[in-house]
Length: 430
Image (tube, rainbow, N blue to C red; front, side):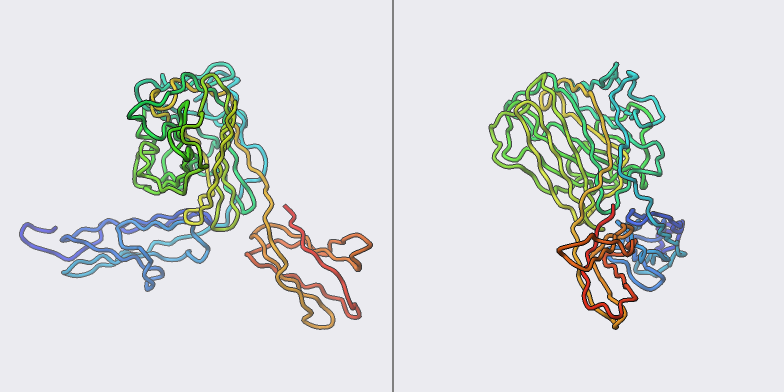
């Protein structure tokens, strides 16, 4: 606030720093300023355009586009004056999407759970309490007695290179486990005893490097992703036992200790109040999938099956649309609200190619020698343009393979003078 008894205009202590991100990542700029309070802020793009919601010392840009690249400065002001920071440059690089195929499949054949590096058959796990998570040959055992436990596993080795989904691809995590001494509902029981999350540490967060974080810790600051908040009793005590949530309080270091750091995307399936739930000593499979269906939309799906139980729930997220992941986390809310132990026998991560619907939106003849085709597309995907002379006979011939650059693509075929009719189709070529 300046010298005692004297109010002063703002000044910049630390200017925002340049940032380089990948298309679709989040970008963060921060300024440190001093002066008499209250200080107010307004971020500017390319020196003159106010940034929507850019009224804090820190500016967070989610899912950046190429059009977001440029200069970001901030005006700091109070009732005595203003000061403007130097501009920081945001560079947006093309993404390096993860190819379809297996990322990791760990069955703990080496009887270890934290032996780096991460490899195709070796995940690396850390625990809030080292004694709560141990590995032996072909399994990993998590124990939650009298207090909640947090277990975090990484499935990529390079902290800067997570699984990155192109449109039309999905990440699918499969965990096979057996609960021991499943909790029975009692008065005062919490609705949700097990939290399971697919997360991303690579964009501004700090990875764990050892055990000992609290069950409400986990280096949660700047971690993004999705969480399943699961009712886990021998009898379901809610009508919709699966709640899917997006992590939104990115300044919190608490990874999964409170649902207040998440925004609910919806619960389901319905009709399960007082229905039979989980059974001790029964093997279950969790499937947690995120499918990128459009540039700004993902579908999040969870399924748990085993014994007589098979439940699933899906939501569509066009607000946060997280597409990058490198970690999987499990938080068991003590034995009286979940189970005493969880015996894990498989942790598998894979990237899958999924069909993406599209349609031909235009066909015409710009002149007598050519035909122009226009269709819906996904950037960086390949499409085969095919034609044939008759719908009843003959094979389709590929006349061009086109790599899309945006959500609409065109191709013009020339040399058609004298051709009265021809049939065309566009084939998605994953």
